Length: 155
Image (cartoon, rainbow, N blue to C red; front, side, top):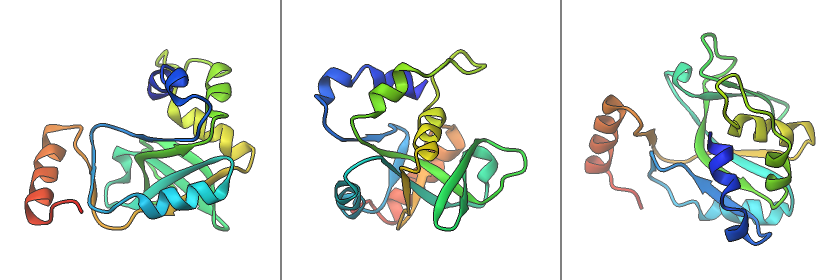
C-alpha cells in the first residue's frame, strides 16, 4: 500500500517533514500556501480535501467542528462529499506510525490507517484544495484530466 511505499523513503527524509503526492493526482493550484500552513503547524499531519460529486470513488473525510473525525475508503454511503486528495503532509513521526501498522484485509499497509493515527492524536489538520483536482487513475479519469489541463493548465 501507499504507507508501505512511504516507509521506503525514511532514509531519504532524514527526519524531516515531508509532502507525499500520489503520482496519478493532477491539480491546478500551487501547494505553497498549504505547505506554509503545514510548516507553521510544527507537528502532525495535514491533508487536502476537495468536494466531489462522486465521493464513492475516493477516501472520504468525515468532518465535525473543523476537524477530521474519520476517513472511509470508497464508502457506499459516504458521510460527506469531501474526497481525500492524494496530497499528504507528514511530520517525521509518520515512520514510527508506519512501523506499528498491521496489514489491512488486502494485506497492505494503508495510508488511511496512518491518517487515523494522526486523528487519534488530534494532530490531523486539513484544508480544502483550491482550483480543480482530478485523479487520473482510470482511463475515464485520465480523459477528464486531459480535458482539464487543455482548458486550464496547472499554475
